[in-house]
Image (cartoon, rainbow, N blue to C red):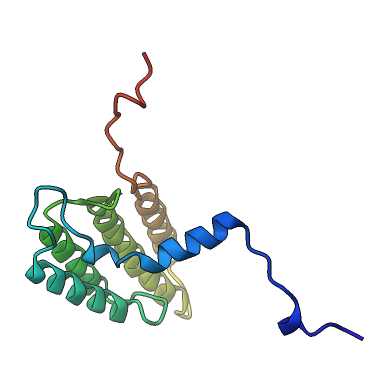
Amino acid sequence: MSANPALLPTVQTPGQEANAARSADLPPPWAKPAAPGGAGGRDPEKVRQLQALQSRLTSLTAGGKVTDFKALDSVLADLIKVQGSTVIGGVDFAVLRSNLGKAQEIERLAKEMELLSKQPKPDMPKIQALMAQIQATQAGLRTDVMAVQPATSSTQKP
C-alpha cells in the first residue's frame, strides 16, 4: 500500500518560507522606484517603452530561435537608447550586439556552404574557404558579455 502524496506533510526550512514570501512581494524590475532623491517612481513613458520592448523581444524569441537578426538588433539598440547606457543589469549590450552581428554572418556563410555542398560536383576549395571564414568569425565572438564592475573600497585589496 502506497501513501497518497497529497496527504504527506511538506517540509520547508524557515529560510525557504521567508524567501518565498519576499519574492512574492517584489515588483517587476521595470516598476521599481527610482533611486533616493528621484521622483519617487519611474517615468511612465519609460515604463511604457520598456514594456513595448519586452513585448517585441518576446515575439521575436517565441519559437525558441531568432530568425530576424535585424529586428532583434533593433530591439537591443532601442533598449540601450531607453536605458541611456550599453550596460544594463550588469550585461554589456554592445558586446551582445557585436556577437549578434557575428552570428548573423556565420549563419549566412553556413547557408552558402550548404548550397554549395548540395551541388552535383561541390566546389571543395570554396567550401573549405567558407569553413575557414566561419571559424575566423567564431574566433571573433566575445565572451566579455558581463560588464566589469568597478572595484569598491570593500573589494579592493590593500
